[in-house]
Image (tube, rainbow, N blue to C red; front, side, top):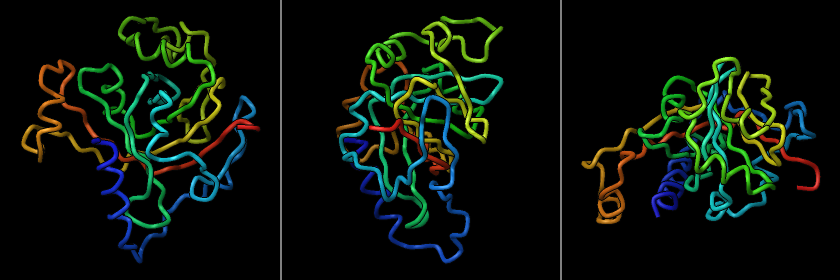
Length: 213
C-alpha cells in the first residue's frame, strides 16, 4: 500500500516539467557490464508492471569500491521525479537494518534481480553485521559466493544478477509517526522493532539486463 501510494505521488510530481531539466541521464549509452549484462533504456524498454516489480524479492546493494552491503527488499516504486525525462526508483530501508548505515554514507545504489531464489533468501535472512571480514569490500556477498563488480561510477553490483538498475539518491525522507495520514502505517509499525523506514528516491543512472531476460 505504501509503495503504491508513493508511486502515484511520484507520477503526479513528474507532471510539472522543469525547464532547466538538463541533467537527465541517457541510459542507452552505458557500456555492458560484467556477467553479460547489456544496457537498456528504462523509459522505453522496461516491460515489468511497476505495481508488481518489487514483489520479485529484489536485492538492494549500496556502497563503493571500498565497502558495500546488500539486503533483500520487497517494497519500492518506479516512475519519474523532478521531470518527465528523469526516471527514478524509490526504496525503503529501516534504520535498524545494517544496510541503512551504508545508505546514509553513500549516495549510489543498485537494485538487482536474480534467477536463483537462494540469493534473495540469503540476503533476506542474514545481516551484514554477521560478516566482519575486513579483508574484502563486501563480506556478505563473499559468503554467498557472489562476484562483486562495479559500474563506471564505482557503484557495486553482483555479476550473477539478471537485472541491474543503478541509482543516485536525490532525496531521503526520514519518516516519523507525525507523517502518518491514516491508520495503515500506524498499524503496520506497531511492534516493528527495526524502526520506521526511511524513503530514498534515486535517479536512474543506468540499467542493464542479461540477454534473453
